[in-house]
Image 1 (cartoon, rainbow, N blue to C red):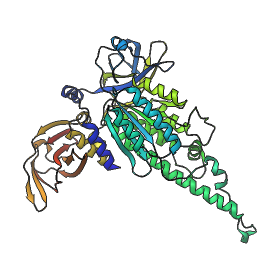
Image 2: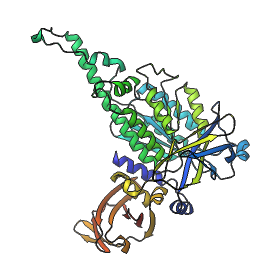
Image 3: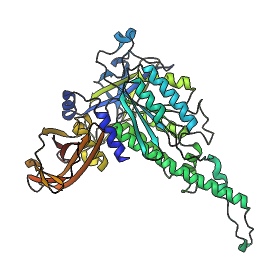
Image 4: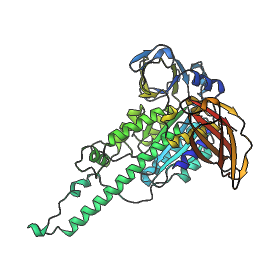
Length: 487
């Protein structure tokens, strides 16, 4: 899954790079950029929303000064004069298919909806197609691409359901805890058929539990991939985690039957989605709104994940869901405002309210001040290094980066050795050195790294080169928030 995350970053970042003046502004001034969707009460796009028609609150305090930017693909000609004066920025739409929990029949319904959505975009909307898979987790399939045929082909031929065929009756727990009678203590031998059924149900429950864990891990990696593209909308096609399993995890007496703290895990995923700068729209291909009383329905967790990220849960008829998504893609805006400062919190509550009657706003519940370099995991740091190598915005929102030439290496056996000059301010500081090798023809990337305390202004870095790969080095001092890109 780590390799897939790196490959997605490589493919995605070659698509859209922000202007240097925007990057400098983000480094010098802390700005919040909060996406929102504005529709009317019937779910139709509101294309003429104005700044004076919304209110913005950060941690409960009203934000007086902000600007409103239209996102999305081109508006219709008759609506062009109604859009805000600020030019529209490109919005990348993620179509994410759950092939872990969702069976083939329902996944085929989801694919049909997505294909109709792509056709309705008529090449004006760049799409990324990804899937959550039982083996491999998050998988990149296509994009960002405006080529309708390419996107549809990826959906038709590459999106697959979980090949592991098993069913889980959510109310199977009724017999799982059936006691085994001991004839030596005056009991009787259990009925063989009942015992066999009990064991089979317990086995299915364990399999389903493992499947749910894989699903949650795949969404975590999706959040990592989302960080590298600034303007995006995310639509997840999934039947969700069964209500019965959610109840087992929340109210069950046996912790082995469910997942301890599942509700908190889902809340954490919603915050991760917000931290990436977006919210989630979940489409349930199961059809019309399933009842939350049905233990085999998956609407409870999906509702929570969408709601707590600030997004929306869609579970209506196929045609209605398709129309809702098309309208939402046309209804994206971004509210931009300066950080007022104060407090040490990294994640802040944000509330965008519509003042115009009949306008419904969906937006983030929480927004991030950005993360410090030291807060990143090792994988996130490797993704950051790859992000920096293609001059994208995420790395420059965390670090102040300057460029220099990559020195000519020497040879030592099968390794190339680079003699690196470190700046004086890095002396006695912890320094991370990343060696990024990219093969653009094969869409492949490899990242190796080394950490050290810089005791001098020189350091030798040896690495085995890969034929056909372009090398880049990225040297980071996290405490100083500085990076040096050598290309």
